[in-house]
Amino acid sequence: MAEIRIPRGRLLWRIGEVVETRPETPRTKSLFLEVPGWEGHKAGQHVDVRLTAEDGYQAQRSYSIASAPEDRRLTLVVERLEDGEVSPYLTDVLRAGDGLELRGPIGGWFTWEAREGGPLLLVAGGSGIAPLMAMIRHRAAARSDASCRLLYSSRSREDAIYVEELDRLAAGDGTLEVFHTLTRSQPPGWTGYSRRIDREMLEEVGWPSEERPLVFVCGPTPLVETVATVLVELGHNPARVKTERFGPTGG
Amino acid sequence: MSEGFFSRGFRGRRRQQAQDIHLPPGQYLVDGFPVLSAGPTPRTPLEEWDFSIVGEVDEPKRWAWEEFRELPSEEITTDIHCVTKWSKLGTTWEGVSVDTLLQEVDTAAEYIVAFCDGGYTTNLPLEEVTGGKAWIAYSYGGEPLEPQHGGPARLLVPHLYFWKSAKWVRGLRLVAEDEPGFWESLGYHNHGDPWREQRYWGD
Amino acid sequence: MDELRLDGNAAGGLLGEIFPFEMTTAQVTCANCGSLWRVGQAMVYGHGMGTVVRCASCDNVLIRVGRGPGRYVLDMRGVRYLQAEQA
Image (cartoon, rainbow over all chains, first blue to last red; front, side, top):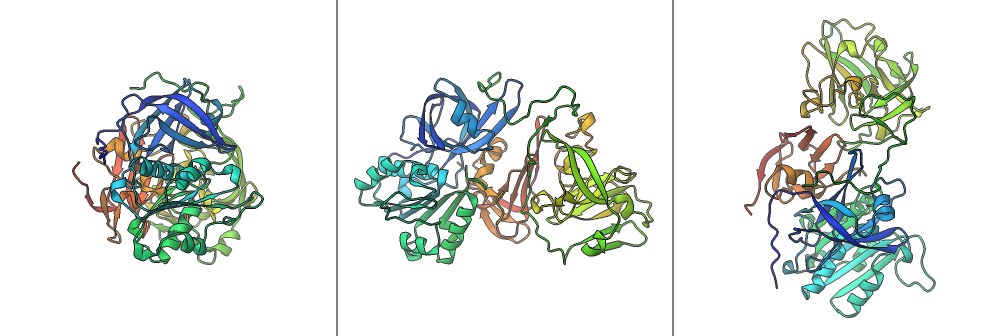
């Protein structure tokens, strides 16, 4: 298994080229980037993106990297926030051929490498799936057999990102299980969960604390805090429950 | 590096400025009321809230919430300017003038430190909060001040950058020597006049 | 619960400008309550005027960073010890 080494130098702003944009759901879009001089990343890390207007005004936000370290192109997935300043630009204006200024990879704490093993419990809310998708893709590329369960909360089937890819990965891999919960509306015949993540759901989906899973929780802050609190109440070691809050609206 | 790069088609959140609006240098108008936070939002119950004048005074003063609300109050309409460059014009507040609170206070002190729930502080010369320049405001836009905007009450000193209008204020400490507060000790200008663009040390 | 707080990773970019080593995995001891955290586990408030990193247990300010033209101002009084791994 190849070891991924992240050289630790000063973070530099670089200009990546948008090679493709792809709508994923009504509210989200994937951005595929080629970044000259990119030195690799670990699953779970993020980049800071900076936009500069012609008069010098700047706005900066962080976006999790959704691609695996093994992937050729760097992928970000952006949720368009109604009153956002940066996300509407990234989803509505940015197109293939444009430059996007970014720096990274950032964050050494919320990361998972296949050599760490499992079992792995991933809990995502909305666009919080992004860094966890990087972990799932890395796990597949590294052919890890660490047991992995994803609990993914979305408003509706249409708002869930990567559904086909997750189905495909889980179908071909007995050690990956994907659980969806759709909190606002469900398609006809839906047999999955249809409520906000709660203690009962985490008990059903997650491993008992004796299994000592590594847990990663990412999404809107209220969801992350509820899940992290419940997991610790269920006996999980807080040092093994890592969180990435996306803020009040979620990304 | 990335000098000269700009993002095609990006304007940001700024509103178009009407020609006849005169803002301090470097400011722009914004819709909404941004919430900036350096820590958890304090949630002091009104039964526990009080406001004090302490420090270099002959006799410290203290008002509980009910007593405070019985003091004569004023309606204030004013422009506010944040050092992060957004401005709002014509904001409306209701509060007690700091002049009212200092009416019976005897002091030789020349400076104040405003202290707040959560530990925030900001410093001002006494003459910048007297003479009708400052209030303890408990109402914004006709409604009780929300916790995220500093409620139950915040200091309001609109002629200076808005970090001086300390949220969750619980009192003023009168001091003989100036004591830089939370942001003033972290690189921000000690005085903070938006019209002279006094944002940082050395400006 | 405070909706505006983020995890320590959110300060990774700014801290990465200042420190030549990975700060989000550095261990800090809170000068107020003595608890031990990785910076990635601390609570970050990304105020527009500066970044404030607080102890996840007692909310004490661990690290404050202010920005000015061509300068950083760093207050780390809230950290008793900082321990970082050599690369």
